[in-house]
Figure 1 (cartoon, helix red, strand yellow):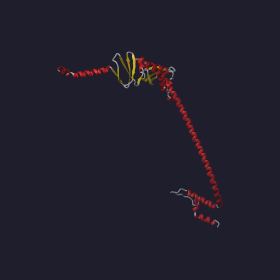
Figure 2: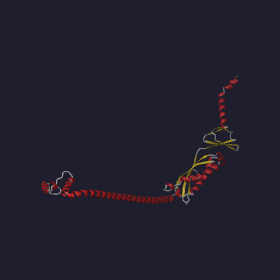
Figure 3: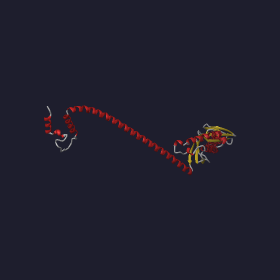
Figure 4: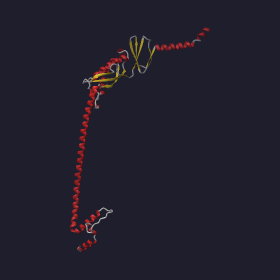
Length: 310
């Protein structure tokens, strides 16, 4: 009885030991796969792929060897060819740095052909450099730098580089190339001077073109304004002639009446002259018999009245 009681005195230590042993066994006989991972399990030389997230059974090392790969997007800008001088189609040297965005699509192929991600990126770097040199060598320098935005083909060149090696990357390494970009473009000093000279020449051509266009537009506007002016003047002169002819017709009617009574015509003409004088503080010193004020001379009026036949 005493031995049994003595045995239960150590149950906490025994329980703790059992828990530790269970954890140890779980660690040895299992592995965990995250949602962002793909796992290669090598069992006595046989390779299997596990993509399902969670806890999975395995035999202890060295029976099962676990290799984990991150299957998210990777941005790789190269090793030896990170920034490298390349010749264009006309033989002009340019320094280009590029990057590649990829993800692991076939982890088994990557493991069999490269073994790990570092060696896979070394092989990928060689593919990138070969594709870049081939594509850049097929383009002129003006496709990389130009004063006209429509003639710059950086985007098209990036697409060509991607298309050139994405199939090889998939077939050899199980990598899917998502994007390729040029992040660095450096021109040597001599080339830079030539580029600036060419840019100045192109700008001069453009400025001369715009000046000529402006002169032609200004001339066209002046000609249009002159034509409108001439047309307006001609139209006004035509209307004036019409108005004058109408006025002459009306005047002819009145002249026929005035011929019958010339004294009345003279009297009306004098009244019209007086009405046309502007009112205001105006003082005139004139003879009473001066035209057209002679109509206000009482003596003249009486004389004219006596001489007028009844």
